[in-house]
Length: 127
Image (cartoon, rainbow, N blue to C red):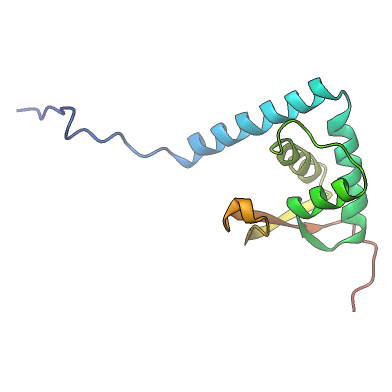
């Protein structure tokens, strides 16, 4: 006899890691596309800023780059998620490596775990 699921007992299977990654990637891509539609060239300019930041900082989070960029007059994208695509582009260019997850410093993120990055371009001196 086969078991029938009804409205009260059915539980969908949990999403796979690949499904979650695909949804995240779609959101990041949509944010990046929107930023470049609103301000053509925004993504390339943000990537150049991330490179400058990585040359001067051994480890950092994307939110550190974003805050530094805004403090220096860089325009906000329509959605902050566009910065995720900038970090991923830098990673694909082998400028940065993911080191792990660190709680966000941004109070609006409520301690959400965010990627911390290690620079392959760091030109400074330690100590």
